[in-house]
Amino acid sequence: MTTATAPSTSLTAEDRCDRCGAQAYLRVELQTGGELLFCAHHAREHGDKLAEVAEVVVDETHKLSATPNRSNHDD
Image 1 (spheres, rainbow, N blue to C red):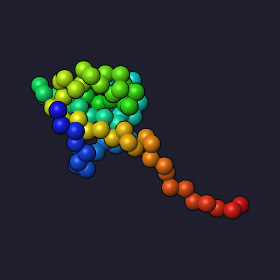
Image 2 (image 1 turned 90 degrees about the horizontal axis):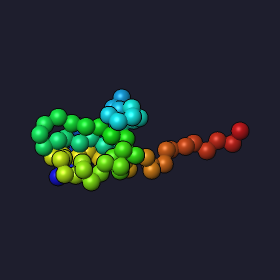
Image 3 (image 1 turned 90 degrees about the vertical axis):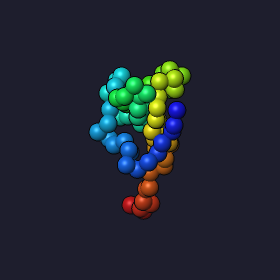
Protein backbone atom coordinates (compact mmCIF):
# COMPACT_ATOMS: atom_id res chain seq x y z
CA MET A 1 0.00 0.00 0.00
CA THR A 2 1.21 3.50 -0.83
CA THR A 3 0.11 6.65 0.97
CA ALA A 4 -0.03 9.68 -1.30
CA THR A 5 -0.59 13.34 -0.75
CA ALA A 6 -0.07 14.61 -4.29
CA PRO A 7 -1.88 17.90 -4.99
CA SER A 8 -3.34 16.53 -8.22
CA THR A 9 -5.32 13.98 -6.23
CA SER A 10 -6.47 16.32 -3.46
CA LEU A 11 -9.93 15.82 -2.06
CA THR A 12 -12.39 18.68 -2.16
CA ALA A 13 -15.49 19.59 -0.17
CA GLU A 14 -17.52 17.98 -2.95
CA ASP A 15 -15.96 14.54 -2.31
CA ARG A 16 -18.29 12.53 -0.06
CA CYS A 17 -17.91 9.42 2.07
CA ASP A 18 -19.30 6.33 0.37
CA ARG A 19 -20.69 5.11 3.71
CA CYS A 20 -22.45 8.16 5.14
CA GLY A 21 -22.19 11.11 2.77
CA ALA A 22 -20.00 13.27 5.06
CA GLN A 23 -17.03 15.12 3.58
CA ALA A 24 -14.35 12.62 2.52
CA TYR A 25 -10.81 12.93 3.83
CA LEU A 26 -9.49 9.58 2.59
CA ARG A 27 -9.40 8.22 -0.97
CA VAL A 28 -8.54 4.55 -1.42
CA GLU A 29 -7.54 3.36 -4.88
CA LEU A 30 -8.18 -0.38 -4.92
CA GLN A 31 -5.77 -3.03 -6.22
CA THR A 32 -8.61 -4.33 -8.39
CA GLY A 33 -9.36 -0.86 -9.82
CA GLY A 34 -11.85 1.73 -8.73
CA GLU A 35 -11.79 3.88 -5.64
CA LEU A 36 -13.58 4.42 -2.37
CA LEU A 37 -13.98 7.66 -0.42
CA PHE A 38 -14.31 7.81 3.36
CA CYS A 39 -14.82 10.39 6.10
CA ALA A 40 -12.26 10.21 8.91
CA HIS A 41 -14.65 8.21 11.12
CA HIS A 42 -15.26 5.45 8.57
CA ALA A 43 -11.61 5.46 7.48
CA ARG A 44 -10.64 4.61 11.08
CA GLU A 45 -13.46 2.08 11.43
CA HIS A 46 -12.47 0.16 8.27
CA GLY A 47 -8.73 0.96 8.29
CA ASP A 48 -7.43 -2.60 8.70
CA LYS A 49 -9.52 -3.98 5.83
CA LEU A 50 -8.72 -0.99 3.60
CA ALA A 51 -5.00 -1.57 4.10
CA GLU A 52 -5.45 -5.09 2.74
CA VAL A 53 -7.14 -4.02 -0.51
CA ALA A 54 -5.59 -0.59 -1.18
CA GLU A 55 -3.11 0.16 -3.93
CA VAL A 56 -2.86 3.87 -3.08
CA VAL A 57 -4.27 5.85 -0.15
CA VAL A 58 -4.67 9.62 -0.20
CA ASP A 59 -5.05 10.60 3.45
CA GLU A 60 -6.02 14.20 4.19
CA THR A 61 -7.33 13.68 7.71
CA HIS A 62 -4.68 16.14 8.92
CA LYS A 63 -6.96 18.89 7.58
CA LEU A 64 -9.34 18.19 10.45
CA SER A 65 -6.85 19.33 13.06
CA ALA A 66 -5.61 22.38 11.15
CA THR A 67 -6.33 25.66 12.90
CA PRO A 68 -8.06 28.16 10.62
CA ASN A 69 -6.56 31.63 10.30
CA ARG A 70 -8.57 34.10 12.32
CA SER A 71 -8.30 37.85 12.42
CA ASN A 72 -8.16 39.47 15.80
CA HIS A 73 -10.43 42.49 15.71
CA ASP A 74 -11.32 44.66 18.67
CA ASP A 75 -15.00 45.49 18.27
